[in-house]
Length: 186
Ligand SMILES: [Cu+2]
Image 1 (tube, helix red, strand yellow):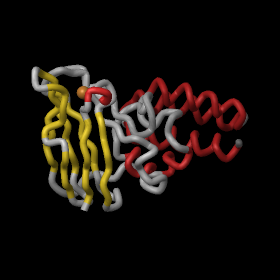
Image 2 (cartoon, helix red, strand yellow):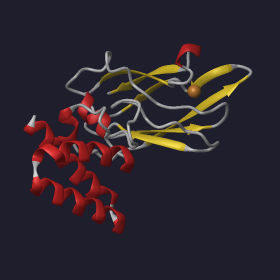
Image 3 (cartoon, rainbow, N blue to C red):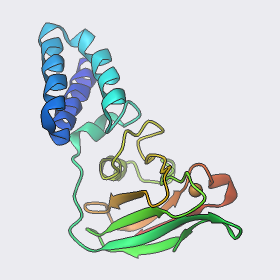
């Protein structure tokens, strides 16, 4: 339990550092005070903090805290998220990228849309890096991005350090309506 508590704490520290700015220093300070008091009370504090702050929520696998987001180093592929008289879909739905590329998903119409991966279909060894490369609070799961509510709102996922393979993805609100596709990382 203590190990998990420390892992959560560590992730909070990392997140605080990533967030930058004056606000995060306050959180870091309060967390630091808690951690010097007892490890037992630190764990709940970390959970509350991460759900309020943002990145890597309680839904993330314990190992996820140890993995840093890997920024894209290659090209960015654009994908539209659409919902209209033709149905709900990603366009293109099936995408091939090279490791290091990124995919930028843009809410064009019919939102809210989201980008998510089924944990049952992503190898456990891949999940920490993929989750780390997905910005957002992960309130709906370690491999679920945020809801894109506004037209033209975009969400970019880096595939740097994500192993070659095929990854099914979906829009959670429209999964039952067939809004999904496959990303192939070469
Ligand atoms: Cu959708």
